[in-house]
Length: 104
Ligand SMILES: [Zn+2]
Image (cartoon, rainbow, N blue to C red):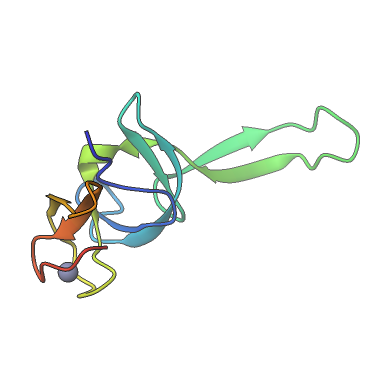
């Protein structure tokens, strides 16, 4: 199956506290259908310095969220869209925006 979302894509979050926010995909876990988005789903971790030079305190970092909770934002029409798969003449599969029918 074609990946609906790729690394460095812009996606919009559909649910949760970060609903309707947009961010860039920084990591993907296709096996688990999870995605990590910059600035989205920030978890606060209280970390203690374990090594010398490491800062202790509160760390904020992104956590994986379900791929089904995000929608890719089309780079052409800039709206969150459903993705169609189009088979190109060359035999490659491409993602096509369901909104503007552009391949992105
Ligand atoms: Zn589009």
